[in-house]
Length: 244
Image 1 (cartoon, rainbow, N blue to C red):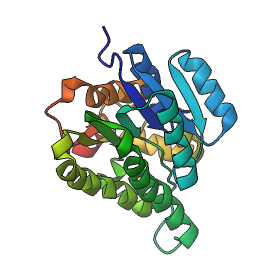
Image 2 (cartoon, rainbow, N blue to C red):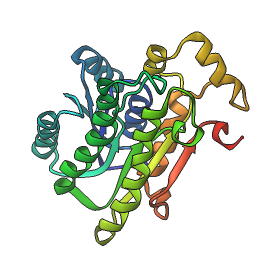
Image 3 (cartoon, rainbow, N blue to C red):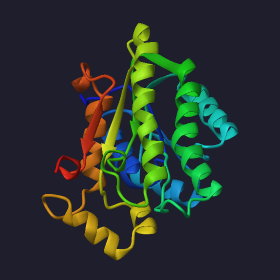
Image 4 (tube, rainbow, N blue to C red):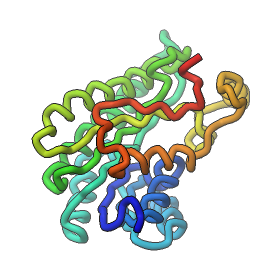
């Protein structure tokens, strides 16, 4: 029997990268998974890759109407949620002095506002004893030049976790932040130059990027009963980058 046998999971931003690897792993461990993505083609490819026990729902986690449609689909098809992995996020490097309203609004609109309303709209369907996971970033602990707005938006999730576990303790719903570092994902390919990737790799003790599957194993831990006494925490999955 898998570690998530009979569980229902919702993963936002699940059409690529770490979230897709996590969705695949969750299904392998017995869960039924709903994934979201903004591009239908990528979402269809992700569903095909996962292969079974998965529903793809196109939508933007920053759009409240899209979130309503997501959870209406979950309610209609399964009627409950045991695991919510709020993983949809965005970010790019813009140094102080060149930050625009659009840059700020994009980061906080999805990473903070989108995460907040994803969790809030999921709660009516949540089973007691469930697990909420949010994707943070080790940028919030390191002070990388140019990443100030992104880092601040991800740091807000730590505050959410600490507040929400207190508000949800009567339902025994755990809330944790998974904090990846430099992971080889399609999003990273879009936002990092070759030089930036080499710089980040030089900061990792093993000298190379993490892989989405390495993050997925940690997401599985936080989703399962293996982490039953882990609550309100930040679990860093960055190869030691933030420790040195």
